[in-house]
Image 1 (cartoon, rainbow, N blue to C red):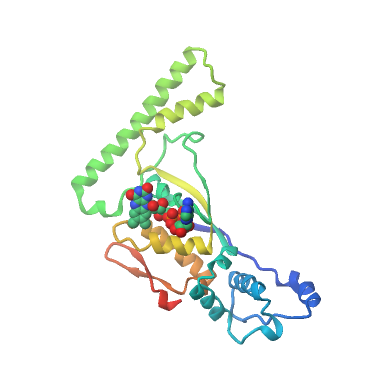
Image 2 (cartoon, rainbow, N blue to C red; image 1 turned 180 degrees about the horizontal axis):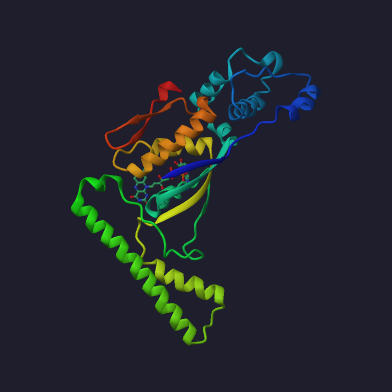
Length: 255
Ligand SMILES: Cc1cc2nc3c(=O)[nH]c(=O)nc-3n(C[C@H](O)[C@H](O)[C@H](O)COP(=O)(O)OP(=O)(O)OC[C@H]3O[C@@H](n4cnc5c(N)ncnc54)[C@H](O)[C@@H]3O)c2cc1C
């Protein structure tokens, strides 16, 4: 599994200087806050215009902690990250894309992409059970052969007769038929953009399930990345190690 961060929040404080001048106020930024954290603090402060004399001495980390404690989490939606996930199974991404709120997805298409050379993502724990692993390996390889054979037969048949479909749609139809035999383990790639509120929800409901190792691995990789980018937004989450891999622990009191 690979999780590669490809975009993260940038906060342009310079662009706000005219705004603060016009409002006859100013904002004291915390020296250690990251771009994402400044962005969230700024959005929160706009709600109450708590700048200048109205700004308390709370540092950014406490300000964000307070937002989360109060449940004012819509402010967290302004910080978004984009990452590439590769080497994950279609079973995993089927679960991931159920997250409708605060997430955007662009996934490798099995209709436009030939899956002949696809890899299959082996469930990690299987290596302890050689017989089960053998069955798994031969089964996924058989699906590859079935995929190739179905493609070849339908290709040949379509050459032989006039199709109602144009070549592009014909290819889509043929690959659609062939892909139907590919298993949940089929490798996929997906670009995900998610905001901090959505990521927090995902970590809580998905990263904490002991029996779902692939999900836990992705959740931990995600938390590692966004935790570096905005520690205050994820201070109530931590990664622990179980025997087989990482798991997310959530402690609301540690916000
Ligand atoms: C342990 C576990 C087992 C699961 N088992 C199954 C299963 O057997 N079958 C299955 O189909 N799915 C299953 N799921 C998936 C689950 O039902 C959700 O689809 C998935 O976790 C996304 O969560 P969500 O809807 O909270 O996230 P999002 O879609 O991102 O929504 C985030 C939050 O927004 C609010 N929200 C979103 N949409 C609405 C809406 N239409 N109306 C009101 N509020 C809304 C809710 O507060 C929601 O929690 C399981 C999930 C878990 C964690």
